[in-house]
Length: 279
Image: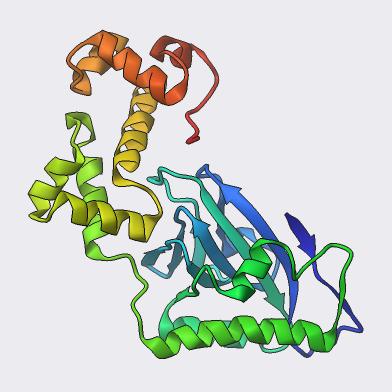
């Protein structure tokens, strides 16, 4: 869903919503930074499921379901993308707004509070946007109606700043991802990760899902499968050698695992022009 917001007798000295879209990203080519954008509007990019990445300067942030980020679209020092280590599709809505003091307000909020803001996904305003109830292609808004909607968005963003809640992804989640990445060829599992971090299996599973929207077991499987796909496509290793490298106890088990997760045998994938896409 992607359409412009038509405003009758718009006043360009006043901020207003200009566009909204609801989308799903699942490839690293979903990428935006100011140096490649010609537009000048601002956005609130809200995560429904999965997770995304945004950055301001050298600081990178990961979103979780119920968390959105502000961005000035042509700011060369910031941007956003589908994370390269993501294991699930990223579903989101983006509210674009422009004119008036949009840029000044957005920059001040980012500089003061950081780019991330939490709005409950059950919030009526968010639900109406997700379901397309507020913005219909054939609907036109008066200037006052549009400003009321933008004010409601800003109200929920400002409300989050008053809570002083930290919506950044905890260090535990990053530690889990680092362990998965560094041990991917050792077939590390949830129990092994819990033991290394000295926390319970139930705790890391619950916390990982809470902040990423993905079950840890599925994250490990998808990350491992993507790594195998990379070995098949980008190395000269034989299927037997990849099976041994990835610590499968037999080539037949490796083939069964790969087919279960990609619907192709390793040989079919290696000889095809396809890349692995999370389903």
